[in-house]
Image (cartoon, rainbow, N blue to C red; front, side, top):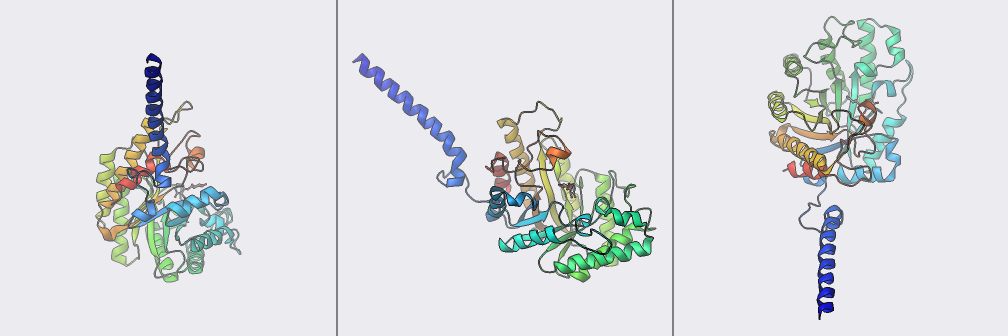
Length: 362
Ligand code: XIL
């Protein structure tokens, strides 16, 4: 009898343990297999009523898991560097479109849109161009040809462009280190004309100004708004503003919200254009990405997508994450090797951040 009781006892303990265990396994895998009704199975692109973009690299697309993840979860791609000026304009007499073409063809084959990044950025003028020391007339006519050629080549295939990137320094003054500032008496006028050149080459493309810390830096934001007002008055064809959103778990959400609402008051399209959420903000070598940290990151993502959803429908354009998986992110080089900023982990599993992003979507 005692023996029987012990055996039943062991039996129940085992059943209980295996149920618990099952629960964990089910939780991790169910959203992939679709067997757990409590975990959403929709992908980002299926749920969103606007584009969900990813910055990708041609090189990384050779990894089949990466490539499949892009196709499965996203509806738009941006070349992480393949369409920057220095990468295309390899000499004064030649363009190299190999990588840019690859991305545009990849997008077409997989029904993805392409967002072009970026036509004019002080950091991506090729060396030969910088060394040529053009005066303002020659400078502008060269850039005009570049914009006309590149936007024209991808007319109808690249649906939107960051025409100008990162003009303003922190606080809102024009960047001192930009090669454009000393050349033009009125650099903002030059930027405005760049929008005209892009528009002439593809009248249907949506044209953006893109910068970082737009929602956090009130000075920079007011400089951008001033520029937008001037562009509108002059008829320079700007459609939208991109805030890169390279933020972190501890970024102040109230400041974010205030700045976001303020930027949206321009009535322009709003693009969250390079979203990633840092967790190791102290750049600690001993940092451990715990479940609690992953949860916090999930909440940050949810906050951001809900905030975006609160925009008037006609101002929503896209949310683009700057990368796809923690396996490949610019932050492990540019920030700290222990960084986990994206929606999929290194094995391409959905992180809590993915569910957070998803649950913020309407
Ligand atoms: C970064 C890319 O992620 C890197 O791969 C590249 O080497 C340097 O540029 N703001 C921008 C992006 O507008 O173009 C930058 O991308 C990240 C910061």
